[in-house]
Length: 140
Image (cartoon, rainbow, N blue to C red; front, side, top):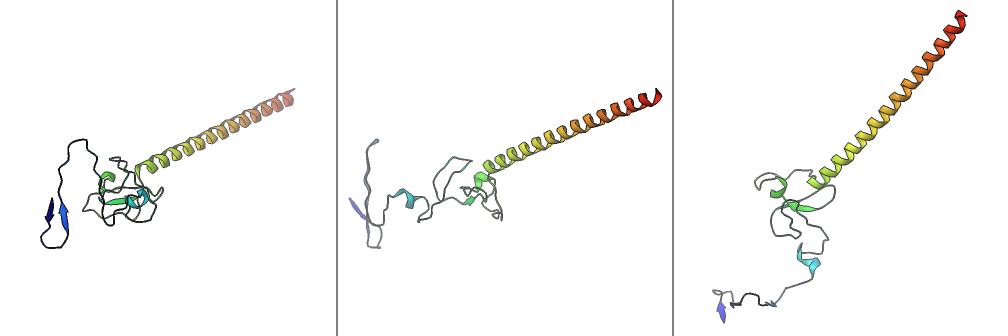
């Protein structure tokens, strides 16, 4: 059945379908090509919201991570709708990765420091032994 939309000249059709039925939609300016759907344009940008798991632009306010370029909802990233978007933003995944890399580097530095201290102690002990030998030789 066609129903007028109140004067704009186009007709709308309302049809009730049963559960489980397949619905096919056709019309002007409909493009099912996946690369055009998410952003409404040819840009190839990735959406993955760490908070809710969405992988598509659903029209909510979003922000991109400055490190990985992934887009996610501002609300899921702890930014309220009435808050300003920060100049720089790093997602939780990159934060965790950065923290892990930082921790690994710290552990490597500590290991190097421990090795240097052990080497220094070994040198000091060797120096003390030499001094003791020299003192013993002088006493004889």
